[in-house]
Length: 177
Ligand SMILES: [Zn+2]
Ligand SMILES: [Zn+2]
Image (tube, rainbow, N blue to C red; front, side, top):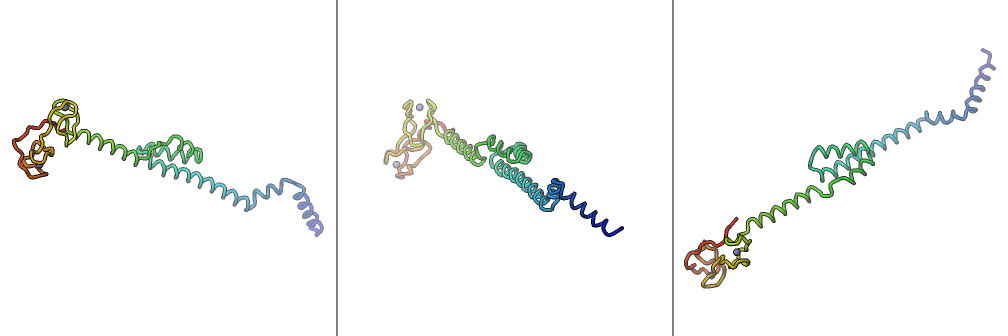
């Protein structure tokens, strides 16, 4: 092949390459820079999605007791990403499990206190340990110490405040739950 033919061919290629305006764009898409940017973009999106799912998991664990609902919450974050996170924050339970347990325990204790309270054997009104008579019906609940005047339990044989003997046993006039 004569020397000038190669030169001409090279020139033609160069000319056609620079005359095509899409070539530079195509070259850019094939360039390592573009591929790097693409990978970074994909990586960023995956990281964002995983972060959303993780955040939903962390938050839902403190609010949701049912494991199935917990899985549904995490899947919502995993499938819908930021949108799933947004939906989750709208529908999530407002109360934390810890707060709920605390509230339930408090209510239980309150119910226990009320249940344990002595009641007037006549009208069933809850009465306190130091009441001498029922405030509702006037029924006598306790006698008082003859020596110091403090209220006495019916079972006491000795006044715990002044050590005086309790004169005559008294029948309980109130009921314990
Ligand atoms: Zn009463
Ligand atoms: Zn006494």
